[in-house]
Image (cartoon, rainbow, N blue to C red; front, side):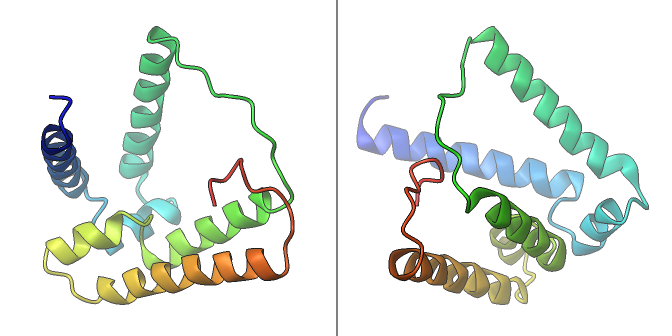
Length: 138
């Protein structure tokens, strides 16, 4: 399965499985996410924390280590903006795609905002911010 078609098929199947799982636990529902972010219902927060713990254990078992990268001045403000956007829109960048696939068309506004935000970030970084962004992948 090392061909392009095989890898593409594996990615599509994995994405569908992830989307189904994320939707099943409620991460595609804005009301559920709002309850998580306002600490009204710890169920999803615990689900998220459990998933992070499982991935950390798998990484430890497979001996996957984070490569040392330079953290530059844009990482912290970027992380804060990402978190604020997540709380306002009701999800990380993958969630609006799941919401649209579930029939929630207002999520198209969030997708448009993501596209505009990424383009603005690249424009501002290339024009005004002259730091190495290798730790962020921009």
